[in-house]
Image (cartoon, rainbow, N blue to C red):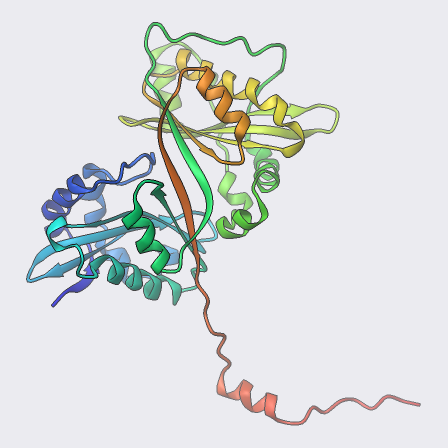
Length: 343
């Protein structure tokens, strides 16, 4: 009999073996690795708490006679904790076709949906028909197409002149402006699914960019920073590049462009790439681009980025039936005592 429960430390070895068997390429900087899997196996205690208090990715495994047949991992996608991203869904090849993946999905829908989660999202390769069919049967629909690009810097990587446009490192005072920019840049349906808030764009004060190794290491510890372009006349952000750094894996670029200033986005993106090539430790540079960001595709291809995969961003809305307390039901059935209106 297959049972589903949280990942514990004793499952680490079998879960690592399953992680190596997955066919889907993992391109997210935050995605699960063997090291991350080991650390998260020690956080099994968080599964006794409501999902709003989970401090790291939540991982659940399907077991049969102490053998791990599959697992699913997900993490909250925003500070509102109403949208959760499924990072991995892996089933052992010898046990596929038994409905294990469907049971893992149903488990998280019941577990997290009952605690106020309204949306689940996942990225699935456009070539993986089996996975697309699986998620479609679970109620997911296509919200956008995502393309990943990769550049491995070397001595021959060239810099690009960005012109006279000025660019700035975002400061904590721009948190609200970054939130407004990202809301304007996203299509309305995707904006509702992700449910981002101002707290999702908290910015730390960065030390000046220097060429010294000490300065580079300090910058790496900041993990996330933004480059922005500002229209001085309207005093508004026109575009922003979010740079997520993870030691050992690389940097990921995420671009937000205001619809009215799309023609100026190339300069900011090129400036961010130039900065990564010169002022930080050299590691692979990843870029995640949506299908509604055609100008970003053009810039990355011109810079020599390699297109590594196309994915569908799938989303599922989870509905909860509203329940009224018994006392409230009685009140609704009783006649309304309206105040008398004086003549």
